[in-house]
Length: 119
Image 1 (tube, rainbow, N blue to C red):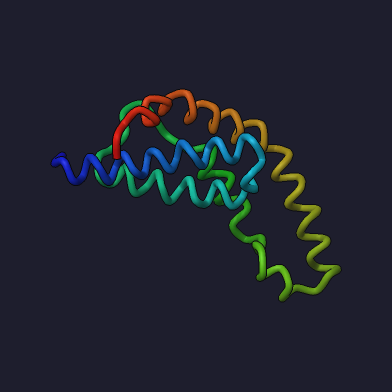
Image 2: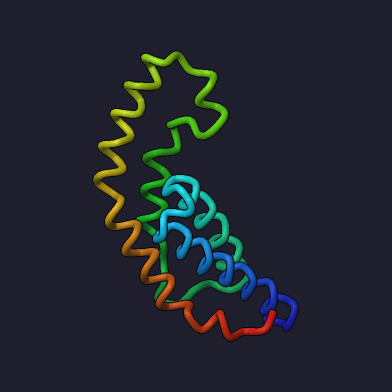
């Protein structure tokens, strides 16, 4: 890995670390945070694969909730239908929330060093 690739990868890792903190503290909603985490992980992993680190639980959560509308798209749905979707989503979120938050804590701990890396 050349110096430029190392710099890019470290930037993605730093963003993963920040995103994990935002998810744990509730500054970022779980679904949006998981989508972002998946993107950042894929970008860093593409530059150089991670050893002994994966975000499978975050990917599973994103996969199971990918059908449900986010943000402004919610305005396009009938209120009754949206209410039923929200009920289904609540069940999925209840199943995954603790696992995703624990994975975020693992990310924060594992990549704590990134705060010291000069970018």
